[in-house]
Amino acid sequence: MIKSVKIRLKPTKAQEIFMFKSTGVARFSYNWGLARWEEMYREGLKPSKAKIKKEFNNTIKKQEVYKWLYEVSGQITAQAFDDLNTAYDNFFKGRAKKPKFKSKKTSRKSFYVRYDAIKFKDRKVNIEKIGKVEYTTNYEIPDLPKYNNPRCHFDGKYWYLTLGYEHGENQAELNKDLSIGIDLGLKDLAIINHVDQPIKNINKSAQVRKLKKKLKRLQRQVSRKYEMNKQGTKFVKTKNIIKLEKQIKLIHRKLANIRNNHIHQTTNMIVKLNPYRVVMEDLNINGMMKNRHLSEKIQEQKFHEFMRQMKYKCEFNGIEFVQVDRFYPSSKKCSCCNSIKKDLKLKDRIYRCDKCGLVIDRDKNASINLGNYKLAV
Ligand SMILES: [Zn+2]
Image (cartoon, rainbow, N blue to C red; front, side, top):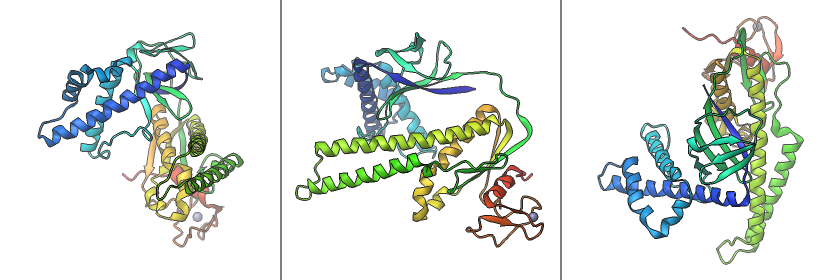
């Protein structure tokens, strides 16, 4: 099993300059490769990462104006072409959209780190061409000759190193009788069949509400400032606007972190119950998003992220992950006698069974049904 970890880096100012340069080289190479790839394709040549790499080394890297490319690790360029190749591969296999140019403003600032140069020693990690960078982490990182796909990235505030390594820790024994059913929702984030308390919706917490209020205020300020400084029909970015936009970015980042952490805590808690399986509903999120009134609330709950984390954590711990299609009547079925209540409305928060008299919270009933789900054979 590959375990992946994210380590917060604390580079010096000088190191940080090189790290930003590295992200620039990664983006430049990727974009150059993408443009050439498209050109070759139009010219009827068969583009490949080897051809692109060779051409880049023979033309671009030989030019005086591009000598800054040598200030960073040569692996960064090579990996950018590998990434491009993967992106095209995913596109041709229908797994992803067509590769796009990475914009300086909006693309993720990241670069590949040569895996065999990484060394952890005395609370510092060695990164090729950048040197020994201080870091903090709660993980116990083993000293290995190589790590998987190490990358550095900047999230708008901090730098991180992410990497994977092979890990064969003893796995906890799973409870053969424990099947966890999870019902995701808007009132609470999740109702779990074997957990008494609902998992709260973090977006209703005082902290998030305060941040969202602040965000709205700043966004209003910015649009007012844009309006005020408009020259004819053109919008002008003033220093003040730049400052405000930076603040807005940081709040977005903070909100994303809070939501992500909440999901991590919840999914970790579920894994620690050591169930033999976890059952969730395949949510029709895109269909739900069409309801404009709910779409913001749904987006904030990050159901996709919940599902993604639950899935990989299950995989990692040898727990079976079952995704039930959305036509399974998890809400309409009585978790006690299995009869189906056809007239259950969306607004009915309490499930009352006409057959056996069960009275139960609607979502709890759904989570129990999910936990009891039997695969059709
Ligand atoms: Zn019943």
